[in-house]
Amino acid sequence: MVLLKTIREFIFQVLSPPFCESCRCWLDQRTVLCASCVQKIVPVVTYDLILSAQSKISVYALGAYQDPLKCLILAKQRSDQLASVYLATQIYEKTVFRNLPCDFLIPIPLHWSRRLKRGYNQALVMAQQLQKLRSGVLLADVLKRQKVTKYQAGLSRLGRFDNLKNAFALKKINPDIYRDKHLILIDDVFTSGATLAAAAKELLKLQPKTIAIIVACRAI
Image (cartoon, rainbow, N blue to C red):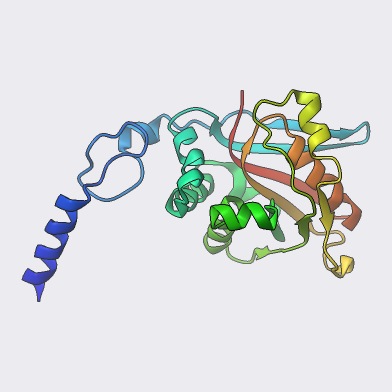
């Protein structure tokens, strides 16, 4: 039995050898990034996302939007959910996430048509993994993406915010559940902040105690 297992593992290694997703070097064991690339992941300083003159939200990122994190973000284009799980694990291990007050994790939703095309929502997979890693935290399905927006790439900063206008809405929920609670928005990448700002403005209607934002990487 042990011999058969060893043979299967050897064949699997030969047919599908493990490579680092970033530098493509060969790995001794099946994982996502090599030790060298993992060391390149350095958390960036906290960013304040201004929603209004009276409201701002802290944005915490695992690192900058560059390799090796960039290649894991782009893995969603080939429906690689393992990359999303890995990103969430790194967020848990290397950011202040574990110490932030949190009652509910809220992933940024995809429009149903885009989710159907991609097969999954990267932000949701990340939130699910973070929930597994931190006990006592709940996953909240409170936001819906009510219109198909253009892809943000290529748009100006003003165009990005205009593109996300009225893109999100609260679902039919009991708002009392979230009043005076600590909410954390989860997304894969922060560029202009248009997406997260639009979503956060909807969450403010719930009158939470705090809102924070956690992303895998932020454009610097």
